[in-house]
Length: 154
Image 1: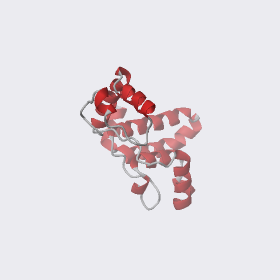
Image 2 (image 1 turned 90 degrees about the vertical axis):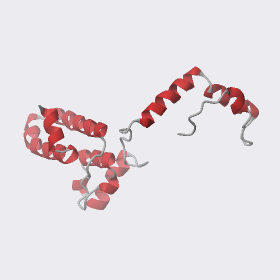
Image 3 (image 1 turned 135 degrees about the vertical axis):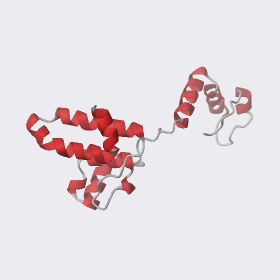
Image 4 (image 1 turned 120 degrees about the vertical axis):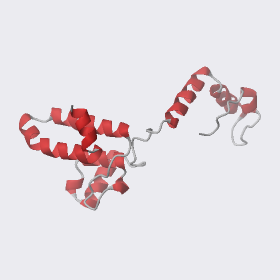
């Protein structure tokens, strides 16, 4: 958090960086003191204080690049949509020697992963669903643990 203390517009105006024009600095200071910005600031501060805030541990690498990285480093079997998604949530550096994702540390990301897996299963045809059922259950179990999964399924 940059600064917990709220400054008044006159206080901001006194500390203008040398590289910004007077007009631009006045507009920025006015915005920082506006009710619209203060509402966003408060919401962002509350969000940052939550213990379960980081959902994506993939860094700045986009999904497509992560998928390509997994395929190049571990082979095509590690670059499935589900595994790529899970690797982005657990962190690519947490993959095992086969490129399978590590455990997803946050509860919110775990819930999102389960929802994604169920959404994907609904989109499959019935014949594919029978084949994929055990694979999906194994993925879910690895990602969130048996106890958590059983609590969701009850």
